[in-house]
Amino acid sequence: MTTPTSQHVDQDLIKAATRVARTRCRGENHTVAAAGRAVDGRIVTAVNAYHFTGGPCAELVLVGAAAAQGLHELDTVVAVGYRERGVVPPCGRCRQVLLDHFPALKVIVGEGDRIRTVRIAELLPESYVWADHQLGDE
Image 1: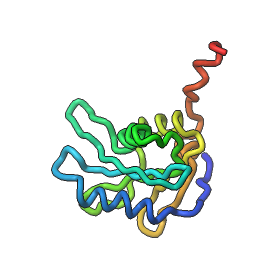
Image 2: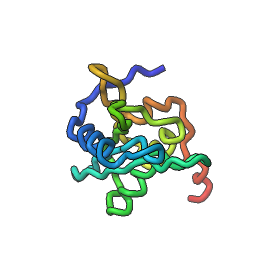
Image 3: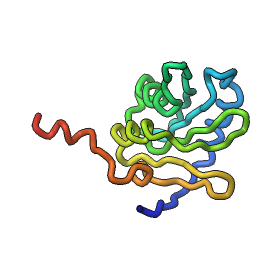
């Protein structure tokens, strides 16, 4: 297993996600907020949309919200749980989607004094590369 490579932790991104978690996450339908920094420095935020059939996680809503705002290249993302749960790591589905959309993405993970920034590929080692199925189309 690869040892995660720590990088600068974007505290402003954590604060943005925390602010959204505190002010926009209400009840059981919205329990996680995410924030992403685009390569041009702009920040976009989102919340999950829980549903018993399995609604999208905050990170997936973030991908769509970023695209809707014309931000097609995200540099770093973080998710934060409401009720002061702090930074939460992306689930397996989100890891795969984030890797597919942004292979160079950095993700903030950890808790307390162990918060760190790692590359998405380090969170999903030996991953399936979605673009591989398109190789015959060239």
